Length: 302
Image (cartoon, rainbow, N blue to C red):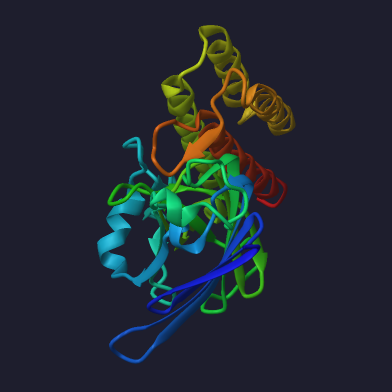
């Protein structure tokens, strides 16, 4: 079927071709309703259905989630201690939109998932190549110039890391590119807008994340060294030649794209039998690039 629909509580999910869309409307015990539209565009999805995608949403207590935003998935701090007497600043969930979106695809019985779903791989398992593009759009948050809102992702129950590669008005549209799932929140992250040092700190933290992920990838030593060499150039130029640092990062992204599907595994499957190294590295590259562009803006407007 080209178009399929599923409803779970106050979450309605539709699939049309390579795009999954969700309409979310959650009401808390005080009668306050939180609304959002979620769009996920996949690269070459197979067996994509609302049931297989398993997208859900819940109202959360920001105080319970904020500690998971203070430290990323690798144990690095997501906070910024200003050299000026401004204090420590960490990403936090805005009480105006205390919603967690969980995408935890499941493996359905083959006879159920195959047939007329479209894009059938033959085994009924949902999969995609490289990365997906995620957008969360909500009118519960107010967009401002250089908006501090970001989309953060975490493994189930784990710590969050920034996924953002764009923020647009309407009221707030946060976008990110990912190579794997699970939990997503929109957080208020003031670090990039505090001062130039705050913007640089965010980029440096993302370089550390990317370095850790490249080291964990199952790839040849030669390709790993090439990727790490380009990342080292980004790191060396970040504070002295941002244009050169962006050029080195673009070369790193090109190298990932060139090797995706050959020397870099680039398939994600719901049965978790493979690891999407290309997609997860690309995810971190794109959000680093976004942070560096914000850093460039902060440098131009100190």
